[in-house]
Amino acid sequence: MLAHWPALTYFCCMVAGMTSWGCTPTCRGFDHFYGFYNAFNDYFTHHVGIGLDFRSDLVPVHNESGQYFTEIVTANAIGWLGAVISADASQSSFAYLAHESNHAPMQVPASYIDRGVCKTKIPATDPTRRMLCGMMSAVDDSVANMTAAYKRLGLWSETIVIFSTDNVRAHSPV
Image (cartoon, one colour):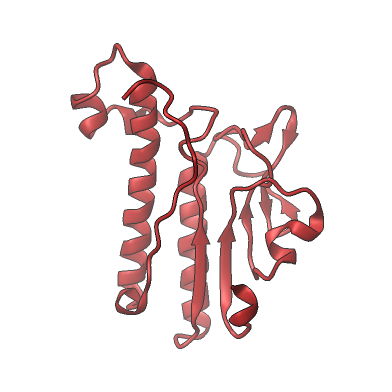
C-alpha cells in the first residue's frame, strides 16, 4: 500500500516481530517509526527479557523507562502529526498506530482500572478482567486523544479511521 503513495508522509508505530533490519518499518516505506520490534515487551521498561526493545526510527529510546507504552506512542503520534502539518498544512499523511494492548504482559497504570466500567462493572475478585479492561481503557483514551488532535488541526473531515484487531485471546471466561 505504501508504494502507491510515495508523496505522502507516514507515521508508524508497528507492533510486530521483525526478523531482520530489512523488515523494519523504516526499511519498508515508513518515514518514521516509534515502537518495538518483538513481542511480550514490558509496558513500562520497554524491555524484552534483559534487552531494551524500543526505537525511534532505528535509534534505541532510553529515556522513556517508567512511562506507559500506550500513552507515549499516542503522544508521539500526535507530536508527529502536528509537526507534519506545521511544516506544510497541505501535506497528506498516513498514520498507522498499532497498540500493544491487550497483549502480555498484562500491565496498566492503576488509574485506568480504578475508574469507569473497570471499577463499577468488574468485581475486584476478577483482577484479570479488570486488568484487561484497564488496558482497553488506555486504548480508548488514545483513540480519543488522536481524534481530538485531528479535529484541533482541522483534519478530521478528511480523515479515515480504520480499526483492526488481531487474535488476542480472552484471558478469562467472558
